[in-house]
Amino acid sequence: MLSKEEVLKIAKLSRLKISDAEIESFAKPLDKLLHYMEDLKALDLSDVEPMTGVEDAPTILREDVPQPSLSYEQAFANAPEEENGHFVIPKVIG
Image 1 (spheres, one colour):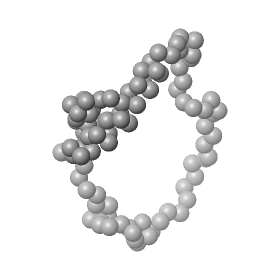
Image 2 (cartoon, helix red, strand yellow):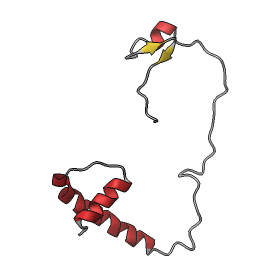
Image 3 (cartoon, rainbow, N blue to C red):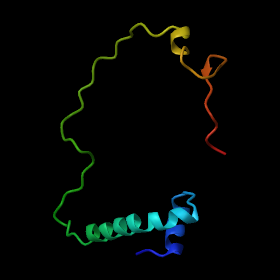
Image 4 (cartoon, rainbow, N blue to C red):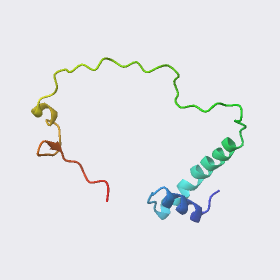
């Protein structure tokens, strides 16, 4: 099983804040996940062709035709906050 230091290192790399009480509850699932990854690394995939997607079928797109849109009032009706015709969202980058 992973040590307390290893769990804290994984949490830091994952940018997770976990309390001392949570460390033990995270150790077993993380250990299981890491062992599973080792099992996957051991597989011989030399004959497996890389995939770029899960589906080989072509993407069928509809014709791009202008259609009536929402009015200003409809578009912002459920917005928690609006400013100068834009949705106000919390800042997420520095």
